[in-house]
Length: 351
Image (cartoon, rainbow, N blue to C red; front, side):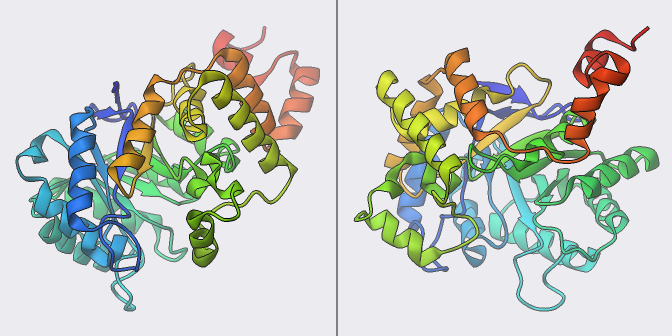
């Protein structure tokens, strides 16, 4: 396991793979019993991981409770990350408001049996709360010592950029990072979210790195139990092999995996780890494992190294249209200015 600084606005040292705990507990009708969750947690720690991610809405709070019961002496050596916005079902116990922010952080601290949270995320934009209210609320919590860093999960790029600038201009605690869905199937963050994070020095945490299991290839077996469960879920977290692009991606993963003698999902995780290795982006991947066997399979991806040619193949077949204005800029900029935006950044203004 390697470690990196989470973005340029913190000195927080985090492992390149984080442990997602959305399956810790069974209150939503699926997931891991506490004993199995503890085995997953201990195996992750044994492998050198130090970043554990949860949320107040995971398993209706049970995920936080289980973590609170098992962290014990590990607490000081962990980066503990949790979220608010989706933990309640009442009018005033959901959303991004200051009222729910304060209510939620106090409830999470109790469930987690800790007196501070390392990284606290707004889980999902409610489309209503002013961004100033959220950022100022985060700053108050930092000053109170209840959280150390704050970030945004599942917010549009323009709102995060506004929040980051606002915090910087007003001397509030800086926005540390973003948490986004990103994988070979879901690459739309390439349009705005990832360039924004790189420009603003925000750390990036990727959730659903295997596209809900699609990138393991297991859903190609129509008789598998997992395939049946996938249909029962029918949720927004799960992707389908719904077109030629998805089929080409999984075909390429299977081919590379066979050549390397590794599992299909391990190639997908290796791509995520290496995708931005030559940029200034600081990225980590959040693993979600129901049991130790799944976690071990995912951890083995650290030993999978893709060649430049393999990376390029996966990059090309998974690429998405950047749309306007990005494609307009790409096409016209060289004609008008004789260079690309990347060259301007690297070499300075054109004479």
